[in-house]
Structures are given as structure tokens and as C-alpha cells.
Length: 367
Image (cartoon, rainbow, N blue to C red; front, side, top):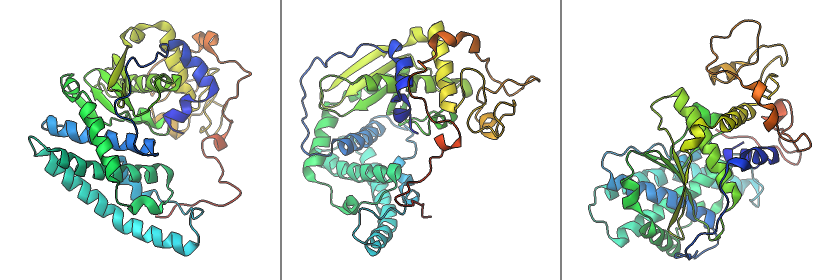
């Protein structure tokens, strides 16, 4: 389960909504309208293109591994979209052959682009084509499903749209914020929700980029930002070198509008600290009443599983003091913030973490 899916659960939304700001309409018109139907792919491609541009502007800026680099090893044997198993195998072999080449060509293009002091619009269009291919590989990595359109040549209109979005971005303001982290993850904290990675961290500001055409932001965007903030605080506790986040931002790329949210007061807000404890416990499978998590081998007997210990998570109460505990549990303060019992909760047991494959067909992973 990803962070986005985790915060969409009704009982989690109910807990987060009191700490989120009101949704207000974007106070400016859309300046770069979509030219195609795949707006999600354009958004992912823009994330890559912004990283490349920031890497060119800031010398020595380290760029972490791309999500697209894991695509080759995430292919599942799901032949449903194909006419036959032979067609699937043909696409599979072609994917295994072409993905390394696409990645190699993209890295060479990025390296050449970073050396240019004043890149032309044509240089940016060519780089945008590589960003589109990387966005397609992102989809393959996250879903595991092969797509014959993976090998299509990137459309020029889509590349031009990306360059227009890049020109609208306040790159200079981003650079002036201070230390930059591109596509940051939260270390062990990310694993609590099955993986979480933000778009940018600029100094003490965490920014999530939204390439949407709606003028009214969804409440879901703020739930996701608050989830990032909680994971960032947990990552800072586990690794003090991780930046302290004081400002959250939503950048609406089609409007060229950045909305910020000052969260510095939340660091010392007692009610938020209780919410944070509940959020981390819920993400890890623990419950407010102190029972064991779903992955513990003997729930209710005070024995903690290796997963909980390795992740440095709050442990089940035991008769002896556990030296691994890094912070006290606030179970005596949780009651006022416990979600309504009538709301649907995640399924108990190991099946909640490892759902059984569909009975319609078996999905296995090819290595």
C-alpha cells in the first residue's frame, strides 16, 4: 500500500482532516492547457524534466536513483492485455532488451544537458522526449504490466507541452531556497506505507507537484502532504541529517502557482503529536490499544516480530524493558482521537498486508 492509498482510507482521512488547511481555488488562470489525454504521464515526465533542469542549474547536485531504473525487474506475467501468450512473450523479450538502452540513452542525454550553459528550446524538447519514456517506465515499475505502447516514439506535442510547463516553473526561486533534494525518499519511514517519495525538498520546504487542470485543489492533496510531513519527521528522528521540514508546498504546474503551508507550529502541537503517533502505529499495523501488529508471530503475547524491531517501530508492551524502544507510546492520550468504530477498518491478519491473488487468474513475477 502506497502513502496515497493509505491516506485515502476513510478512518485515516477523518484523523487528518482537522489539521489540513481549507481548500481554496487557485487565484490564477491555467496557462498551459493539456494537449493530450494522458495527463498523469505528463505529470510524471515533468517531475523528471524539473529534476534535470535543477541538476543543470545547481552544480554538484546529487540526483538519486530513478524509479524507472527498477522497471526491468518489476515485470509480472499478466498477459491479459495481449491477444495471445506468444504476443506477451514477444513484448516481454523486447522490453528486457530495450529498457537498458532507454535508460542508457536518457542518462547520456541528461549528462550532456547538464554541461550546457544556455540550452536551446530544441535541446529541451529532445530531453523532454527522454522524460516521456522514463515516465512510461515508471508506470511499468509501479504496475508491473507490459504495454506495447512503451516503444512508441514520444509525441512532439507532448514534448512541447512539457517544455512550456518547464518555462513556467519558478526555477530561480527553487534554487534560492537552499539545499535541494531531488525525488527524496524517507528511508525506513517510507517502508511503513509500502513506499513514499516526494517530488522536491528545498531547504526546509517540501513540495509536491500537481500537473492538473482543476482550479480547485482536492482535499486529498493536503492529506498526502501531511503524510509526507509525518514521514519526514520520523525520518529525521531516525537520521538527524534528514532536513527538518517547516513548510509544505503544492505547486500547480499548469497554473504556475505555488501554495505554501506553514507547518512549523505543528512540531510542538500536542494534538498533532498524538495524531503522528497514531498515524505511524496505524501504518505499521499497530493499534492504539497496544496489541501486536499483523506481522507479529504471536499477537497478544508480547512477542515482537523481526520486522517491527528492524524498523525501530513502537513495540508491544512486555514485562521486561525493551532497549530497542526509541520513543514512548502515548496510548493514554489516544482515546479522544480514535476514529469512529463504525468506519471501515483495514482487514485484520496477514492477508491485509499480503492480499491473495485474484481467483480469475494467477499473477506471478518473472525474474
